[in-house]
Image (cartoon, rainbow, N blue to C red; front, side):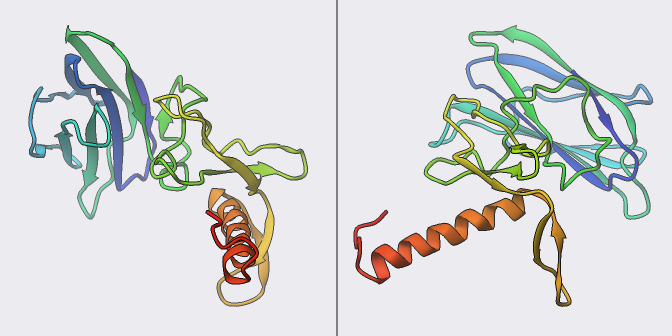
Length: 217
């Protein structure tokens, strides 16, 4: 699996979610050819020193909330440097495969540069934590001028097949208040979410506070 890390990244994290019953060796190759072989089982962070800082690897176990196994890789640069940019490669060497499904996620585009990401990403199942949590309203963003989903908005469903996002709201060039006073245009799912938050608050006020539907949930 090849991916790019763009210039100017101080730190970066990658989440790998595998089936706990599957066993394979994971290795990472840097743009300069340096090779990192990760331990198969470890419940403590494993650190590798690099020319720009360090790489942190954590292999988690199953939890009461999921039978999938999370694996975290984090790049951390020194205060005076950046993570090495270029093409990085992950290698998965199978040892005992039962289901064989692996999913990988980088942080949202608001958290990393636009030149960092996978070369051949799957456009679906791109929702990130905490939008994948159960019993929450997951809000996507759409463009009101074209009546279409915003290209930056994560798409469902979840990796385990739950229908997400719950709904979408305006999230492109929305006129809103800005720091320092006045108004301006803002874009993002963080702009779409307040539409739903405010609507939910008004519904709860109408039902619970005003007594029209005291058992509204």
